[in-house]
Length: 180
Image (cartoon, rainbow, N blue to C red; front, side, top):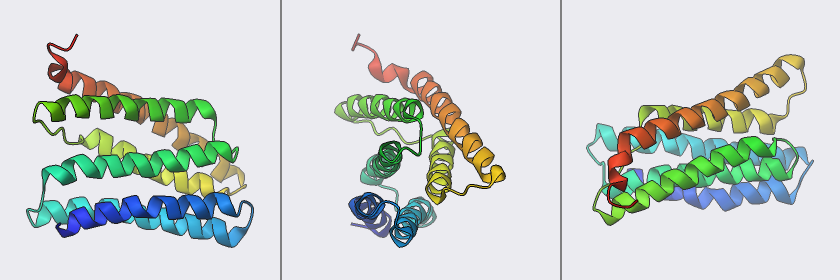
């Protein structure tokens, strides 16, 4: 297994550690900051694995499939925890998680046909905005500027989620030919 794929797998392994720190000790600041640090470290592996894979020509089908899946697992785990903690509205998470299920379904159909559908630039930007949003919400800063910033990041995450879904469906609809 090459370095980018190891980084992807490390991101997956960090998810339960992150969730434990976020949920096991609610309201205890050191645990919240540990969760933020773990989440941020996992986000950094997302940036690193893709850059290393492209720079050193280490792009693999496993990486094309697993990297976006690891991102979905990380972000969706965080979003579900934040809803549970009352820090995010349910409707935003439902939209984001629904998009991820739809895209995962498309990827499974494509995989059955021997195709690997890589993430678009819009989807990568969506993921980055979602990751920043999760960190901002977890920080739970109460100053008016940060409350407005959180709302903007939440809305931007939802809009980018919808835009990237539509883009993905339009671009890859041919994968579904003969399925309907």
